[in-house]
Image (cartoon, rainbow, N blue to C red; front, top):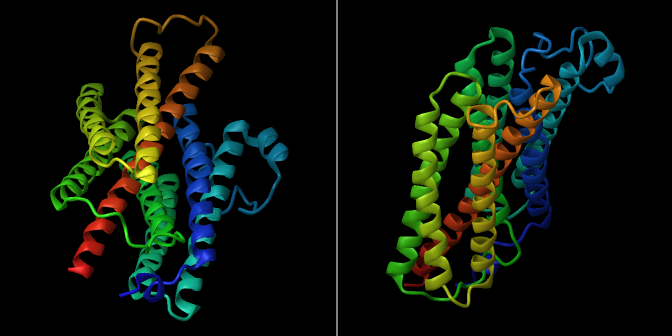
Length: 313
């Protein structure tokens, strides 16, 4: 069976998925993380309007003069989240109104749209109710949106349905198992981290999960680099993942040192100290999301190989 013919490549779906990944990580999650780090999540308690203004207004200076720069950060976060929603809406419409799109792909884009709408509702509830549990779930939902967009980017890539290089079944099964375990641990750790960032969790729980997750991800990297020789794409992702994990651990250690550890009194100026702590915490968050995206990519590779093997057996 020619998989390339039965599952054609839809370039706009792929481009939109890649754009969605970039927008969601760099803007939606990045600005959202900045909001939490700067503690300006309640810069203005109205939704969907901005104290009478429109979501799509660009009145940043006026907004800052009236409510402070924290309100500007919150406003741009809502705009970035809306852009993510519009990208996923466009993907859903293309998948439903383009002839020959596989049912699974239509289901995936529709599910992504439902989840991003749920994210919007959680964001509204966070503002209107000022509920920390909702805030934590909202943060976790953003990671789920990233995961879904990575999956969509992978399965709409131009070379996705080409026959993969054969490898022993037990190696591929192991790759799928440990990448799945890694995803589960990453989500658990992201939940613990979000709880800690919203002052509802314990540092010890986050630390234990971080160490466990790092061990699993390192094992996953080792398996790819030693067992999947000749797979340039997978090995490139694994090497990038190793660098991301190292950066993530370094930022986490620095954030702990400045927030809770021996460097807490390094900066005497309160504004400088707050800025340093916010940058480290937000950078730590973004690296964690990039690690999640990379492990998702590897999980998709393993799943694809197992599916292709089953189709040809």
